[in-house]
Structures are given as C-alpha cells and as structure tokens.
Length: 426
Length: 105
Image (cartoon, rainbow over all chains, first blue to last red; front, side):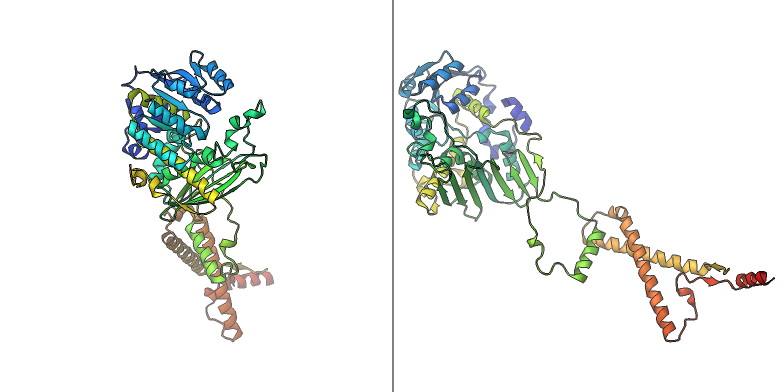
C-alpha cells in the first residue's frame, strides 16, 4: 500500500484525533514540499531483515542506497543484487566516514546496535535502528539522549506505528468504542527452532545470533518489543511493575535464550498486559488482544468484536414468561449459569479496514524515515515509542532472569507526555 | 337422533371471554415490552405469542368454570343458569319436541 492510498483509506488526514493518536504521520504532510529532495542512505547489516527493508528503500524515488556494510560477505553479495551500484564495506566505520551519506539503516544483531548507532550519531548521520534498539536499558537511554543532543533523526523498527490497521484501531480504542480496556493479552507463538542455516560451524554464533545471550535476549527483544509497544499505545501509559518467567523447555539444542517466556506488566490502576511466547506450538500464532468491556480488538487478524454480538434477544413477551417460570419453578439451584462452559463465542467480528490485512507498516515506516531525512524533521513521538518499547522488553527479560517483580526504574524514564513520564535528569 | 345447537347467548358469552383473554394477553405484551425495554414493533412481531397466550388463558378460564360447575353439582347446588359454562350444548326445546313428534308420527 503506498502512502497516498494509505492516507486516503484512513480518511484521517488533517483529523485532530489522528494528531493525538498517531502524530508521527505528520511526516507525510511535507511530502509535496520535498518532492524534489533526495537522500543518500547506507545500510549496515543487509542480512535477511536488512534486505527486507532494502526492498522498500530501493523502490523509493527519494532515496538512493549508496553503500552497504557487513562482516558477512554473502549478505553483501545479496544486497548488491538489489543495488549493484552501491559501495560495500566490511567495517561500518568506513561507511560512516562517507560524508555524502545522510543517514544509515542499522539491521545488525542486537548487541551491536548501541555502538553502531552511537558512532552514526557521532558521524552526523540520521539513524534508523531495528528494534530492540539496544542490549541494555542503560544503553537504550544513552542512545536516546544522544539522539536529542545531536538533533539527528532517530527511527526504530516499530512498524506497527505505521500499520493502517493499528492506526485505525487505536483511534477507535482511544475514542472508547470498545469501552474501558482492562487488559491486553499479547502473544507470539511459533513452532520452529528459529535457526538459520549455517554454512560453517564457526559462523554459528554470527548467523544464529538470536539464540545466544551474548548477542540477544531472545524472544523478549526480538518479538515482544513489537507487541509491548502496542499495549502502551492502547493504554496511553507505562506499566509500573513487571514479573515474568522463562525457560528452555523444548529446543534444548545448545541455545542460551528462552524458548518459552511469560510476563505480566502491571499498570498503576491495576490494568494488566500479559506477554507470552512459545516456539514449540504455533496454533494461536501472534496477536495483541485488546480487551475492553464493550469489545475486543485483534489487530493482527485485522478484526474487532463487540461484546453484544450474538443472537437477538427473545421477544419481551417470551422473556417475561421465562422469568415467571424461573420465579415459580426456580432456576438451576445447584449451580447457576457460571457452571456452564463459557467457551469463546463464535463471533465473526468486523474488519478494521473493511477487508483482510494486506501488509504491515514496514513500507510506510521506511518511507517515513526517508521523508524525515529529506526534511531533517524528526516526527513527534516516534523515537520515544521506540525507546519505551525497547525498555519494556528489556525489563521484562530482566524480571525473568531475576525471578522477581521489578518496578520500572525512575531513572530510565524520559520526558514523554503521552505516558505521563518525566525524566529525572537529562 | 338428538338435535343440538349453540345458543346465541352462549356464542356471545364465549366470544366476549375470548376477546377478554386476547386483551389481557396484549396488555401483558405491552407490560413486557416496557419492562424489558423492547421495541414496540413487538406488538406486531410477537402477535403469535399473544394469540397462543390468548388460547391458553381461555383454556384456563374453561377449566376454572368447569371446576366451579363440578363443585356446585357435587354439593347439590346445580346452577340455575348454565350459560356461564362453555360448550354445553343445550337441546332446543321446540326443536327437540318437533323432532320427537316427527319421529313418533
């Protein structure tokens, strides 16, 4: 879906409610003014995710991909098939020395994000960094501060921020269409070992970096990061306490990160967000269920469901007779309706966008980054959403590791009005 | 062969009874609509339920009257006017006589 179609479909351009819910879409307001502008980007880490981003960037007429950097030659070779004219480097610092490059896209293993992004800011580059943006909470905060200090564009790989389904449904959630949201159940289930083919044993930790604790925090940083952000976006606040549990229960193949994690994020008003990820069963796939007292949203499926769905109530006359019958003969005196099996109702729901989802927001996210680099204007709230998404997945992982509930540390809070958080020091 | 007919008064009495039952059923439906906050279109859409209720009420009324009649008979106080009883077919005096006269002739 291109930008114009996306905005047209939403019918939200200029709407004040959009400004409140998804203000980062203002990036597209400058599109006409910057029509003749171009930006030059370099990509650091054109692996599988990097090349997925590249597939959109290479199609963008406002963007020229001029260089790739990677320590793994096959990734560079694959990237050159898409952009044969680009220069290649095996050391990202050489790429950063190129003064003609405006910004970089970082899609490397998690443990390398911090140093590369910091170096990129130092080199005066705008930065798009895949999530999670850093390996530790301290690094994440330092990176965010560096973004503020340099004034350079900072995007994170939270593509749901640009997914029309999510934008539309957050409008509806914030308008109260689904009533009061008491809980969010997010989960991502797969049935696979999460491994990539390794041509030679010494490359195991390089290619399967997601499975080793030195380079990744597993399911929490690679999957939960997306979904926890949806929860805070919906509730408009930050959880105050996190508890969790995790283990390697199925894929005992030498990996060091959990293949089974469950976390509870508790908010100050008692609302809850749960996160679960199991990679030995894929039946329920992935979803972020937003549970309001009037309805439920399943944005991944692209649907919402109202609570009052079901067969029409019996005519009043029949209801009256049934009530009389209950009064005369009594209802089920031993149990009552709570003993009936309350299985999920067969509610077909309604499409959020009127049809089955076609794509996520990755193409629009990359387009927004290009637009921001061209104009030099950081879209509101996008860095902050990415910041808190990373912090939430990192603190969730920490709660699992420590085996005890953890409060969100005050020193990790930043000035972010939508979540009502204030930085203690800047 | 005996000759029976339903007197006009009986027809009127039973018709009025049935009408009264129908009115009661309609009023019950109105009460239910108000109580259960249902649309007033149910005055029409629930008409079959109302008709069913009408006949049930009428049947109950018949049973009640039969019980009263039976009880009065048991205690030897046969009611003077049987017209309050439903579907008791009265032999027409004149018709019965003429029938017998015709038979004897």
